[in-house]
Image (cartoon, rainbow, N blue to C red; front, side, top):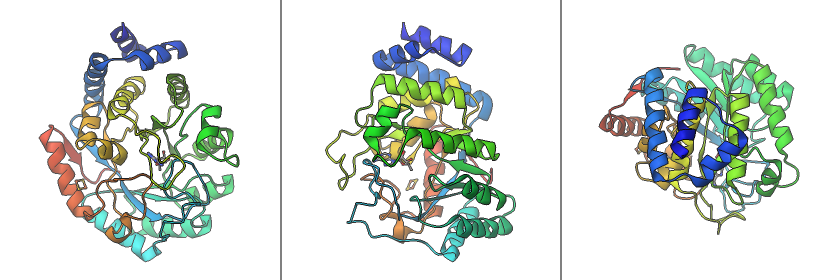
Amino acid sequence: MNTTLIDKLSVSHALAYEEWVTLISSYDENDRVYAAEKARSAATDIFGDLVYLRGIVEFSNICRNDCYYCGIRRSNQSVTRYTLSDEEILSCCDAAYSAGIATFVLQSGEGAVSAPHLSQLIRRIKGKYPDAAVTVSVGELTFDGYRMLRDAGADRYLLRHETADAAHYGRLHPDEMSLSHRMECLYQLRTLGYQTGAGMMVGSPYQTAEHLARDMMFLCEFAPDMIGIGPFIPHKDTPFKDEKQCSAKLTLFLISLIRLMLPRVLLPATTALGTVLPDGREQGILSGANVIMPNISPVRVRDKYTLYNNKICINEETAICVKCLERRLNKIGYNIAYFTR
Ligand code: 5AD
Ligand code: FES
């Protein structure tokens, strides 16, 4: 019965809301494996055996927001806050480029650095690596802020919507944040010509199959260039510290469904997935993902950017992680697409 819905999805690349609810609330392990096989072959039809790397520099853990799930929320007094200098960020890019990575993702908490400062940095990175892509992920900015970064040469922007249900959004965030503003930002980014990434946490507190169905309907309509999804993992210094960690299986199933819905989308097997399951990123690739986002931050700050506990790759330098990933991917029959932006 669910395999019929999965077949329908892979042919028509869409389902009705009620069908999403049915599929997400009643799937079993057979359905998950069935979807993974279809999604994997959809991905290899387009991308072959290649996996794309996007290196993330977590350049500051300062954040003005207070999201209930996130370890670097402003209320968490146990975080040692840091901001990397432009020189340090450039050396992260150098190390990543030497390891074959040609997309740099600049990520930080919200409000950590100003748009003019970030623009200057983007110009320097693009000046040094004209063939590399620069992706920004610093949360909600004004339209002018987004335009300034775009004018400086930023190619892409990642801003997860987190959940497409406004009431659920309200249970994950304080009142000063809203789903409508998040969505407005996503449409502004698209207007400015960014390749835009959205996505949700899977298994976040209070999430239901209906919420995930809304997420799928939104993703189908917005059709982002990239979709980042990962399992919710509790962080010990947040209001959600006693909430339960999301299962890797549900995340893997959704990765497959997203691939079947949007065959060409860039779909990372996230660090969070690799955290809840030792071979989570490999399983993600085998379920239809085609991107991995290695951490290219200086090792000395890595344990300070903990959005959730037990994060992987905290002690391994960029070159080591890339070698490790290559070995892991080769083992499952995939290769890294080096220097692909
Ligand atoms: N568990 C899993 N993912 C998280 N994120 C933030 N906190 C957590 C957590 N506790 C995700 C959010 C954010 C991205 C950068 O990290 O989806 O958009
Ligand atoms: Fe970082 Fe394996 S990918 S240590």
